[in-house]
Length: 370
Image (cartoon, rainbow, N blue to C red; front, side, top):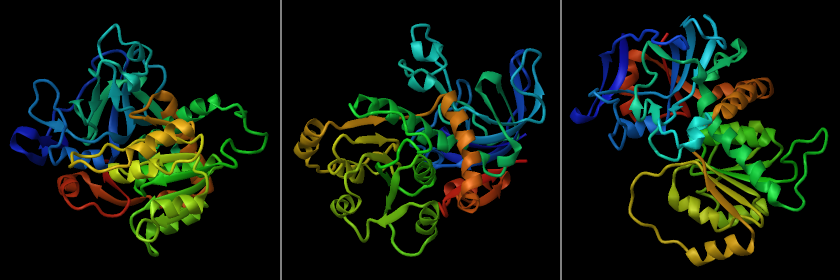
């Protein structure tokens, strides 16, 4: 069968023949891959910044944001059946018995670092015609969101982040459950750094949660991202027209920053204007660059004197996948056109190498396989 893969030793990205997998255990599920999303991680892998083939393989099939259809199940499978739409999870647990998170099914918090990730590290990805995996890594998607279900994995980043924010903010004396009929973020202000798919999906989640949401990104003017944010009920502010100090003055006390840009300088400069009792969530992974100069005294002083919290989040557990699937259905009902506008191109599998190595365009590019 066909697959899009990287060959690190030869520094090549190509469409190649890859063996079709078969069920190997009673709990295995075989999927026909329908769509695979392309993200910044994929683009970094095809420039050979990282990306590790499985042991014994010279190539790595790429792609970790996927949607498939069940075509065959093992004798012990109980959660899925042929015809189901499925979004598979990305990370697989490490083998160490002492790793509590992995043994508890929360490999997103693996403590050994010996996990594998499909399409990224030590395991082939989903940009191919068929895949087989254990049913415990499968998440069933309702047919009503078939056309946007490939956005599930990037939305899990925000789902995991906001779940951790709610837990962190239970520290506050005034912390209390949301009032009946009101969303939990009512009266709070959030800033999203970055207007890529992860940032825009995060903005949707924050608006749905009741936050007064502002997206801060580079470009100004009447372009798709600014218009899309306004359709959601958020505000778009461009770095071209507002400094971070001006942004903070405009927004007021910033209760939450959801960083989705991968730009370390702008992120840490934004940290310096985080509000009292605020939470700053890092989700981006910047590439290697030279050092940047920061006012570390100001950042440290604010963290201490303003009771601020900073944390990073990566990957996601089943709870985040299930929440993302539910919320995509909510978004599709509330913002049908803006949600579908996030996917700006669909390219057949044969064109995947050119898409992966070309200049990014639009918001979210998707490879269609079947």
